[in-house]
Length: 499
Image 1: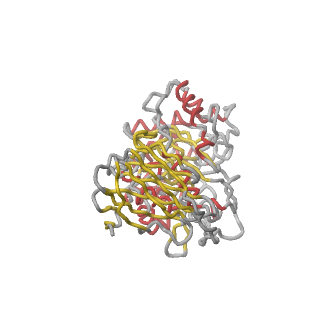
Image 2: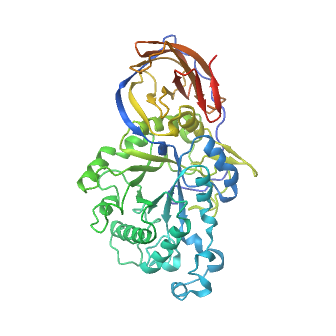
C-alpha cells in the first residue's frame, strides 16, 4: 500500500460518478481496426493480470469477495502488517517479553489472525494469493516504530516462520517488502544501516530464510518497490545479493502510478537490470497500479467517467507485454467509508478504491466492469491467452486475442467523448466455417455493465478473415467482441445463444 504521503483523509466520502455526460454523435465514417492472428505479440498472457492490491475491510469480506469473483478478479496482493498480529492483549509488550514468552506471546494460537481473514476469502474465491509482508512490532525495531528495521533477526524470523506455517495452505506467493525506499515503510532510524538499499537487502534475506525454513515450495519475490528505472530502488541491490539463490527470489515486483502505467514501468530498463544481475526471465508483477495515489483526487480516470476506460486501456497494454506476469490494481478497498484499522492509513477515506459500502452490502465501482469485460466476457481470465498485432486506427486502443478456449475476439477502447462506429477486420483467424457468432459486450460508467451482451449476430468468414461492421463503441466505453464457430458462447453466467 502507498505510504501516508499518498493516502490522505478527505473531508467527505468519495462516491463514484455513475452517469456519463451527453456523448457527441458518432462520426459518419467508421473507424478501421485491423488485426492479424498470424502475428502474435504475447503468446502467453496470464489471468494474473486481473489482480487487485490490498483487501476489503474485514467486516465487508463475506459480501465483497463473491462479487469480485464474479467480475473475474484472479489475483490478490493482500497485506500482513506483522505488528497487527500482536494487537490487543499483547499491547505494551517488549522484546524481552517475547524472548521470555510472557503471557504465551510466542504461541501463534494467541495471535490475532483476523488480520489475515482475506486469505481465506481469496482462496475460496479461486484467486491466486500474494501475501505482502510489511512492517514489524514497534518493540522489535531499532526506531521503536512499526516501520523500523528489526533489531533481533532471530525473533523476526521466529514470527515469520510461524506465520507461513499457520497459513501455508492459503498462500501461493509471498511478496517481501513494500516500497522500501520510502522511510515511512522502512525507517532506518537508530539502526546501523547507512542506506535504504542495505536495510532492504537484509530485510529480504532474513525474511526469505525464515520462509524457506518451513516452506520450500511457496513462490517468493519482491521487493514491491515504488521506483522505476536505473536500479529500480532497492531491487537492484537485492537482485545482486550473492546470498540469494534462484529459489530465494522467483519474481520481482514494483508499482506504477501514472496515466500510462506501462510507459511509467520502464520495462526495457527492468529487463536490462534482470539480465545484468543474472536474473533473466524472472516473472514481473506490477502489483500496485492506478492513475495516481492521491487519496483526495478528482481525476476522472479514478472517480469519474473515464474510470472504466482507464482500467480497460491499461489491462490491454499489460496484456501486450510478455515480460509482465501479473498486475494488481490499487485497490480492493472501500471508497466511501473509513478504512479498516488494519490498513496502513486507518481512519482515511481514499479515492483509489473498488467498492462502496452501505452498511450491509457492497456496490462495485465501474472499474470492475473492465475486469468483467476482459476476464469474464472475453474469457481472458479463464487461462493463458495470446494477443496479436492490432492496429487501433483512430480508436484509443484495441487488441485482438485468442482465449484459452480457442475463441478469437477483439477488445475496443474508446476513451473519448465521441461515439465511434468501428469496422474491425480480423485476418488469419483460422476459422474455416461459413459463419461465426459474434457476441458483443459493452462496459462504461453508465448503464453498460458488461453483464449481458449488447449484440449477438452471425458474421461471414472469407478466407479465414472476419470483418465486424459498424461495431458500436459508445463514448468512454470499452467493448469486447467474442467470436465462436460453435454457435453459442459459454460463460460462467450462462450460455449466450445466437439470434
